[in-house]
Length: 275
Image (tube, rainbow, N blue to C red):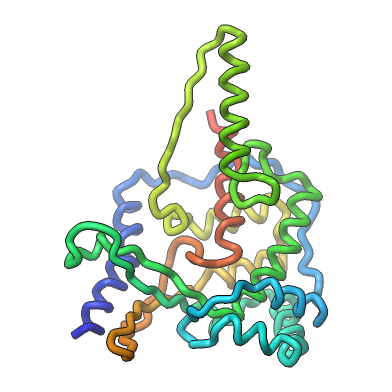
């Protein structure tokens, strides 16, 4: 009975965004990003770097569908770093993200209202612990490339070192005061992006990455990373875990991932230039 309910909830999650997007006007891809002549390279990693990445992985008692806890991975770091070093480098070499690491385990948490209504549950996404090793290695290289090429807008404050909601509020307030002192009109437009990660078109993300300089094998890696994402819903009751069947997600970036936030801000990076 529970597995049937979870199957329905899983399909509900996967259909929610596509159904809303189908009601919107279809527009061709366009952006305000200047073409970057420099090209991002997937430089190989080392076992020492993998060890440092494993040390950075957060200790959590939760796990993805594979059941491997992150703190167990960290405890075994000395024993697995050379194996992971070989696998990650092959992933970079061939531009392929392992399919076994694309499955998200969704845990529904009741957040408000009638507990019998599916929309009143918050889906918590749990990814395999080892997927974060691949993502963190890519993220370190991507952030360095982005900073070296100065690709990010100064108006971007999310998920960046040294920036936060506080710096965003300060910049906004400073701009308002400056305009008021000049006797000009000032206006603020605030948008609440519900299910923002789930709404991103993967094709458009890849288009923008290519313009920014992520090309060739690196672009193939991101295409592999975003494609074929799967998910299933699970919940433990009286010591028994009940799971839904596995379904494929066709839109959005992975919730709970390391790369999700940076892909999100890169996707929105040129919004401030829209007029």
